Length: 143
Image (cartoon, rainbow, N blue to C red):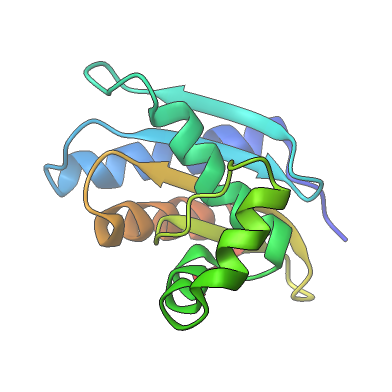
């Protein structure tokens, strides 16, 4: 199993933000977590609100914790609200069950990390994360 390097995490962030600029999105915060759910890199663009780092990490943390992208967590929250509420309680309220938390998979399909993006619409956040992950040579799994 590959491990996301700091250079790869920075490449993910760079392309995520470049994609956002091309789409003319609002300022973003991007968090890259490793397979253990630990923060590898985080960037917060000028003009983002104060809780954005926690939101970005919460989207990625949910994906890592449940092994599914946050889009799937969002759907599950709609279908099984009590389950997601219980999981979020176990996680100390740190999960953010909306799109924008994308799993990073290696060539074997193993989860090697997750990227959380926040600042624009959840769909746009997710699209930017996918672009960054793929530019770093990984497969993106948004759920």
